[in-house]
Image (cartoon, rainbow, N blue to C red; front, side):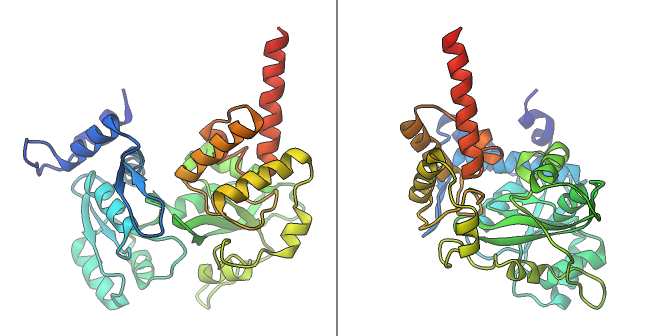
Length: 346
């Protein structure tokens, strides 16, 4: 049984359009007929196609369902006007009651509306401080962040990372992304003498939350700055780690360029492909594709270019993890080449 039937069909809104069908049903029908057709576009941003919109809707339905949100539950949106708001509105309205709120409201106004709405969840942009977040914590409302139309629970991500036996503390936060708006990353404190790396924690989170909900990068830090009340200063983390400016508009850190420059001819060739697709002037072998500005459309172009240059195909799934960085993609290419050589030999 597919996701449509098991997670969202029972939550379809009752309001029908001409012809007796809902907007949700029309979106899914269009996604089946023309998945690559553009449905939402904005100046300077990658367009969203019907196939991706369908994926956002079904993914959000699952995420809300896991958090106990049902069709009659109320979900508040505190997002600026733009493609993210449009996508979030369509996605939330397909499985719950959607209540957009003005991001410019004061804490008192948010408390009034959220309390009277009896909101079950709140969706806010990743990495941006809003008085609504403090209000939701005080009222016990589930907070979710918007990552390019995908809704992620920062509490869930933090809980998954912190459940690792070698992690002492963690905080999730957002960094600027040229097309998604913001990307979700995490800062973690290891237990003393713990011999773990970023890939170990990422694998741990993927096993518990799935590949699309794991943070794109995990940074290890010695301490997490906190307020007088003991809360982590998430807004300071991106600045302290030097991640508060989009990669394409800031000078590339020389320490990264020098320490992580391509180490082999295949990596050097891949770096050129990456810089062309992402339209950046420099790139380190350990830089992740998505925080650099990658999205689904650029991912498709990258894989097409890799096939043209190297004569082999990598999967989209690989781009999310083992091939998400130049060094990892070079290893993935070598793995595919070795597998093909064995097949030809046999």
